[in-house]
Structures are given as structure tokens and as C-alpha cells.
Image (cartoon, rainbow, N blue to C red; front, top):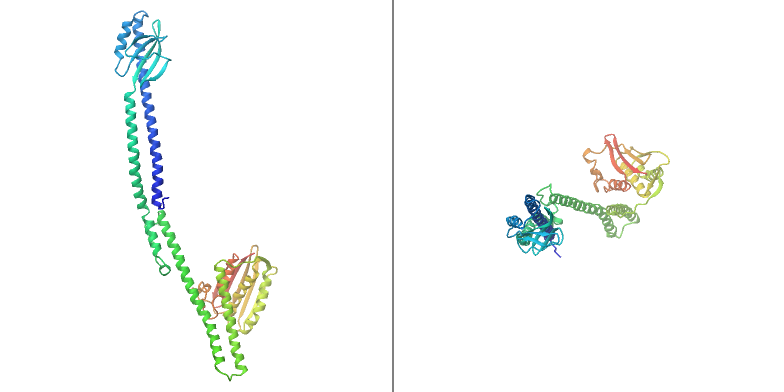
Length: 441
């Protein structure tokens, strides 16, 4: 089996060309042979007609009597080395013949011993006769033999030349593919910034190179995102781990500590463990979501009840920061989806608003809906977010003010997109910030 593409292309090209050349040669030979036979038959017909007219005129001049000497004179004028002429009676007896012309078996054309004959019935005066005109086929057969030799010689030669040319053309045409393969093999994880050369953007190979460059760009972005993710995750995990390590070292370094000191250390470690647990849980959720392995449940629930329960659980956090929660809920907002994830989405948006609301500020949560979708709005009266950060706040581990792990908004956006919806920053200025989420029912 031929492994290389140019070898297979050349083989297929040669096979197709061979079929075309053989078919063309066979058709040409058939047409030539048929035309030669037609020309011969037409010449015999014309000669027979001319002989008949001449003999008929001679018989008419002799009052319908066809004299043998007149026949001999007329036929001698038409005889030729390659064209025998003869005159027969109706019963096949030869009246006169320029050569050993076989007697007629039936009117029409006949080929005998490489000679083409035409037997034509004719009434010459008072006599019914058969005129026989022949034509040697030696010259025609020699011409056809030369044509066969020419075809047998030129077809293989043309096939050989065309196959060599096809191989060279295939090799030349596939050189960019070989170059792209070499460049692609040289690109590794440390050199994803390199790109494949695009020689012609309009042809198929140029489009392939452009597609591969787009793939390399996406891989480069994915690797960079992964590296940032790992670096940010390591940084976020290092802080609570360092706190735990420090508190443990302090607790074990002295034997004379009282119960109060130990309780303070345990409280600090508990807070760090909770933070560490939440970071690991968020990372696990994002990792499963990116891999498409998070099993989304589809259940029927009331979105207004989910919002009410979420706000009830966050009132303690809001009270600690001196923030007042307000809610405006339309009743009976039925939808289908993963209730736990939707509650997580609402909680992340509200927690983010509580963190950015000033002490004594307000956070308002509105929940509404119409045919086909449900809308959630979370507004705080903080100092707002700079315009250049409106999209960066949805990047993982990005923190505009240094608080939190920077995973709340990315997780909220992922949950909305997983349900076929979206989350965005609708407005942000000195009067406050409003986040919106749209979820299909």
C-alpha cells in the first residue's frame, strides 16, 4: 500500500489517465476504421453507378443490345490494379471480368480475401445483370495497422511522461504541507507563541495554516490561563495554610499557655480552614465545569423561594458589615434547573454586593420574570467599579480591592451559562453597582 499522499495522488492520476488514454485511443481507432469503411463503400457505390450508367448508355445506342466488346471496352476503362470490375448475369455467370472476381451471392457489400466488393443489380437494355466493383483493403489495413502501432507506442509514453509530471506537481503542491508539518513538530509547550507560515491565505493550504494558527493561539491562551490558574490557586491556598502553620507553631512552642490562648488559636485556625475549604470547593467546581463533568440536575422549583432562602442565610453576614438587605420578589417564579447551583449564583452575587457596600449601606435584590426567562438584579450603593475593570472582574482570582479569593463572580457566570443564561455588570458609577442575571425557565 502506498503510504505517501503524493504517491497515492500520482497512482490515482496515472490510473485515471490510463483509462482516459485507452478509451480515447479505442474510440479514435473505431471512428477511423468506420470512416475508412464508409469512404471505401462510398467510392464503390460511385464507381458501380458510373459503370452502370456507361453500360446503359452503350446498350441504348445499340437498340438495347449489350455487345460483349462494348462491355470489355467500358470495363477496361475502369479496371485498376486495386479495383477489379466484373459483369455477371442474374444466374451468376460471368459476362466479363478484369480479374478473378467471385460470383455474387447476394446484392450488396461483401469482403472476400481482403477485397471489398459491391454487387449492384442493373438492367442494361434488355438484359438484367449484376455489376461487381471491388476495392483492395490492403492500403486501409496498412493504415489501421500503423494507427494501432502509433497508439500502442504513444499511450504508454504519454502515460509515463504524464505520471512523472504528475508526481513532480504533487510533490511541488505538497511542499507547503511538509513545511507546515516540520514547523508544527518544532512547536512545543514552551514555544506556543510561534506560528506556521501562511504563504497564500486564499488557497486551501493557506486556510489550513490559518486554522492551525488559530488552534495554536487557543492552546497558548489555554496554557497561559492554566498557568495563571495554578499560580493564583497556589497563592490563595498558601495564605490560609501559612496561617494554620503559624498558629500551630505558636500553640506548640509554649507549654505554659492557658485555655484562652488555645481557644484564640483554634478560632483563627477554624476561620482559615473554612476559607481553605471554600477555596478548594470553588476550585473543584470550576475544574469540573471546565471539563464538562459537572452533572447538572433538572428540577422544578420556585426562584423567588430560592432568593428568599439565600437572603435569609446572608443576613448575619450583612449585619456584621452593617449592611441592610432589601428584596423585591415577584411571586410564583417557576423554573427548571439545578436549584443548588442557582442558589449558589444568587449567594455569590449578594455576597459580592455586601462586600462592596459601605457600612450602613444597602443591598437590594430584585427577582422578576416573564415568558421564557427569569431576571435577578443585585444592586449595592458602593463607590462603583472602574470602567476598565468591568470585564476583568469576571476573571478567576481577580480582586479589585484585594478581598476574597476572586472566584465568586466567575462561578456565578459559569452557573448562568451552564443553564443557558448569562451574568453581566449592567451599571456601575459613584451611586452604586448593579449586576444582572438572566436564566431561561
